[in-house]
Image 1 (cartoon, rainbow, N blue to C red):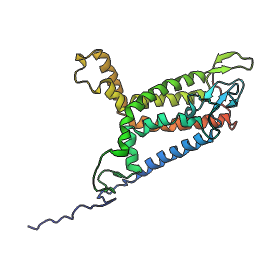
Image 2 (image 1 turned 90 degrees about the vertical axis):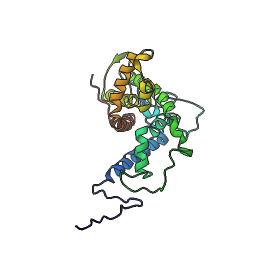
Image 3 (image 1 turned 60 degrees about the horizontal axis):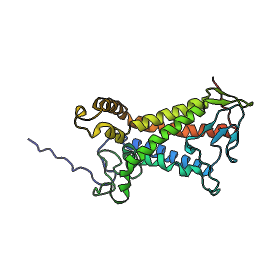
Image 4 (image 1 turned 90 degrees about the horizontal axis):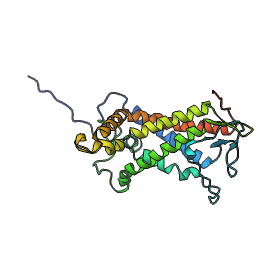
Length: 270
């Protein structure tokens, strides 16, 4: 009977016995997150063509008579401070809140730890560090995720109001009427996906009922259980809502930019 010999497992950064293209996932994640980060930073510095309105707001915005009020989600709520220096974009006063919510998100933490920090690059793949120290020191800010959730819920309300404004069209004579355009649908889809992403948050699930051992033993137990069940179903697709909402918020800003700059015309449907 012959003795079977096996080689010791590989060790070191990138070492693995996996035969599949494990690197594709981290690469695509890095490209996706990096591209959005570059675009959002550029648009914040660009500080123009983010508003379509019927009149100028302190010299800001694109005047288009017979159109609805349409604001980029990067610049919502509309902050017009005369004391801001010319180089300071109001987007920087806004994006830190939704950006912080995504940065501390449990899913995104896994995504950018793997894609940017290679920590680890993928399952069963060697990583650059030799020991695990956890989210300590600088990374303690990840514990702020629940507080960023509260801010994200406020932004869901603000963006919903923007959709309502995008459905109110102003005629040249000053009258108002209900209307829907492609821009209205774009902003509505953006807000819907952001809402689904926010309401599928792990922290919200815990806040509603994840810390309850017995729903029948607490006040409003049946209602909390129903809400917890709904959030749990959304939470099962949290990664999908994270990526689709990220893409859509960038596309919504791009669409408003193109309309405000006169590159394209917003087609009215109704």
